[in-house]
Image (tube, rainbow, N blue to C red):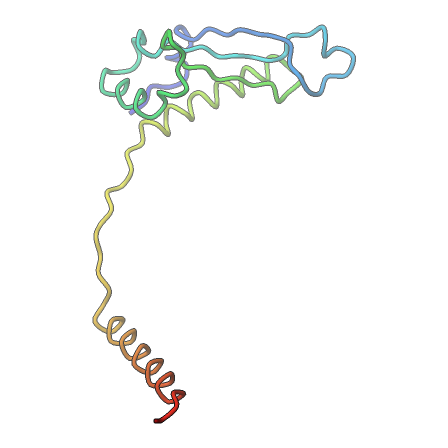
Length: 134
C-alpha cells in the first residue's frame, strides 16, 4: 500500500522556471512551469521492495543522481501547476507499484473447435467445386 501524498511532501523539492505556452504579456516575467524532484533512492517513505519496483518501471525517468522528475506547465498559475505535478507524481508511483494480473492460459471449447473445422471443410469443398475436372 502506498502512503498518502502528504507523507512524500517533506522529501519533494520544487523548482520553477518560465513556461512556454499561454500567459500573454506575463509569460516572460512569471515562472509558472513547475518541476517536481523526488530522490527515489534516499526516500524514507518507500520500502526497499517498493523502490526496486519503481526503479524497474520508471528507471528511464530517473536522472543520473536518482531523482524522479515530473514537470507541469499546462496552467498559467504556478500553484495549479504544482498541484498537477503532485497528482502526476502520485499517479506514476501508484501505476508503477501495481502488479499486473497473471494471465490464465485458456483453450477453445470443443464446440468452437468443431465449428472452426466445419467451416474449413465447407470452404475447402467450395474451392474444390470450382476446380476444372480433367
